[in-house]
Image (cartoon, rainbow, N blue to C red; front, side, top):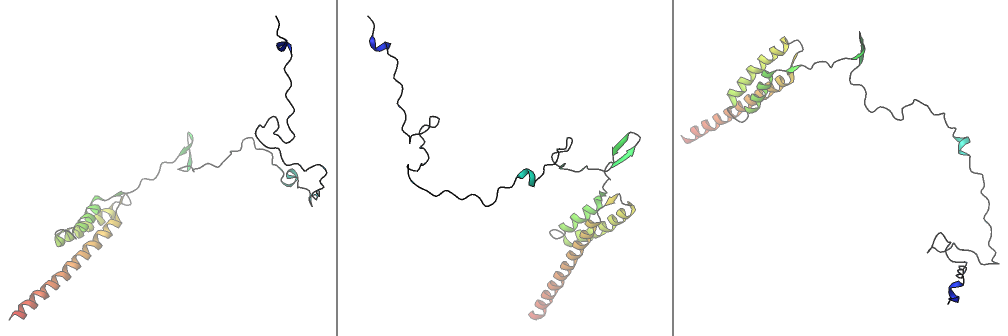
Amino acid sequence: MTNPEAAEPPAAPAEPPADSAPSGAPGYPQPYRAPAGAAYPTPAPPLSPAPNPAATYPQAAPQPYAQPYPQPYAQPYPAVGGPGGLQSAPPAALPQTSGTAVTAFVLALLSFFTVPVVLAVVALVLAARAESEIDAGAGRVGGRGLVGWARGLAVVNLVLVGLLAVFALAVVVGLLVGSH
């Protein structure tokens, strides 16, 4: 026995209403359409036509070997010629800081905290020795700034200790004279 309902082709879907979404965009409303017969003014045309960007800004021909961006860093040393072609020049050697100048500076700093007069005098002697070392080094030995700081700190320390000694002596003399 045959089923008469199975032999019928399926019915075509009904046409969607005019205000429903297009077939590719389900769930989105259609843009607003003016009702039939409504008269709306048409927009005025633009005052001047849009400029043609190709005519306003001509394009330069692309450079086939141009670099797309500048190099971020310059070469560290100037190139010099030699028997093997261009070579890099080695950096100039920096002068080595005098160890005596460093010692003088450290002792001048320490003279403010421990054994003020002794360390300040030793710092002055070492600063003089370091300066003669630097002068004899002909530019290979540095540290002249440390020598200057060592001398300055040592002299300030000696002046402060001298003022403190004069003040202490005045207090002691004032106490001795005032007690009699």
